[in-house]
Figure 1 (tube, chains in turn cyan, orange):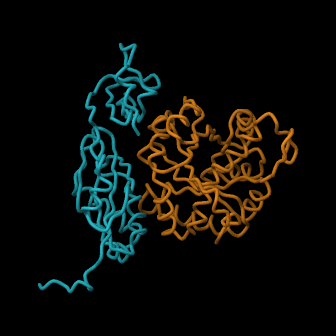
Figure 2: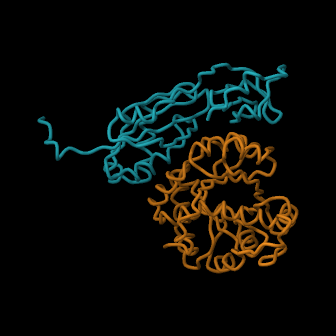
Figure 3: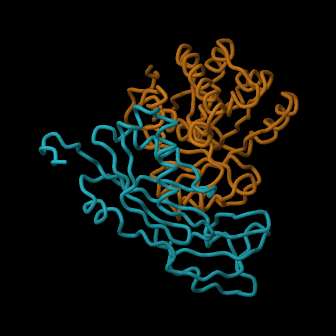
Length: 178
Length: 245
């Protein structure tokens, strides 16, 4: 079909969304899109959901952190934001969702808000102890540590975890960038 | 429905009130780190057993971390004992509602700062409690958690409860706070998202922001009251005092 004339084409805003989950979560675009639609439909209803027209146009997720770009019709931004806030789990994995920024084009969104998207530059999974419980833990560059304890994951930071058998955690304390 | 303090645009730093490990799945430090990234100026830790140093966290993450205790009791009598025990040590004392008796107890106590989750369980809220809350300065909590994390009938009932609460609290101009009651860093949502969600539920934007900022106001007031110069509202050593109850 012939393209619409420019003044009749819908205008979009691109919402850059930061995602976070536990290290074992393996999220992909399809399930995330499904949850976004669910959330929109449940919160805004069918008409509102159709108006906002939330579509995941970029998705990246690796080892517990990631980012997505979600398209939303201009003028429906706040409703789209509200729907995104209601995405609390994908495929049963709890997710943290945060709108990092909003752009008029995908590219501007990528350039402005996707800079630090990759998560684990520090990939080591080693024994950690948090609040008297120990388990394999993974430390992120920003100092966040997710420890898999017998009673489930605990989100911590390098300041409230310790590494058994290491009296001087030198390389744990140096990069505190946040 | 604009609250009485909605005109005060200067003091609008959003606070969130979260559960830390062992009640939740993240330590206070992780919550503070995430809260900073999400744009919060403050974070109330509702978990009494959580082990953390508020000053160190404030220094490190630039977030005002407020230690609090959320009293969970079956009966007003046991809640009363707990409130008395913790009041001298914590800037914020919350009582979790959930039954009519507990809700009533919380709003009739000057010593209680916040009635948390009044509509959880089978607790109810009415005009009598709203008037008492206004008289005694107990903040009524608006829990956005179910709107974010529940679905189906549970969510519909929770939203219905929020609406009812909003109408009653608004009518009597009772004090209130707003929170998503997160139990981990993954359940945190930024204040902007909460405001966007609240707008969909019929809340006024500035009213919600005031409810998020109220935690901070309350903490500041109580810290001053816990400090040595304070004697009673309106009476203090040395400096003059503006009482805002």
